[in-house]
Length: 232
Image (cartoon, rainbow, N blue to C red):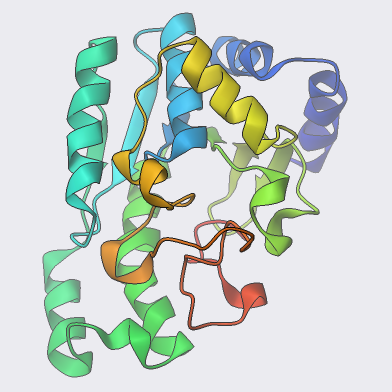
């Protein structure tokens, strides 16, 4: 796997995100999937994929705690591109057991509780979504978080035993928004209300001017712990 990662990173060094996506879809037909959280970067990837292949596979994780605006954007995106975003849901019994034992808003009271919630609502459904595939496409960028500065465009995700591809890794926020406006890409309504990052409603807030773009996620925790476990 590592030799393939190294080879791909050498190839991708001279390619645009669109060219990276086209390469991946050609090299791994029916074995590449894109996970979207409906944020700005993910909407850019969705638009690029739809230009390359209308049958490209896109999924999202419905945790049961999403913003109403997220569901509205799913519908708008599907209408814009004439496609369906596949939704994966958490296991009902696991959610019921967690809430019964820990409470409905357990995540506010400890990092352990928050990671338990993310594990049930995100990580387990993600494993089901990725099962049987070779490539996991994401919209991650280095500038988004201190935990992402050492990432590469191609990486071996050891937790899910899959090759992860991050086509927008080196893009700036300005580049993301330029693409959205130039290509009439539908975007999340909360971006215009101070939300640079979109996640579950109880764990996401608007940020103030000058704050780090990830400061609105799990704001009660330290910056170096602000990942849900989907990306390691």
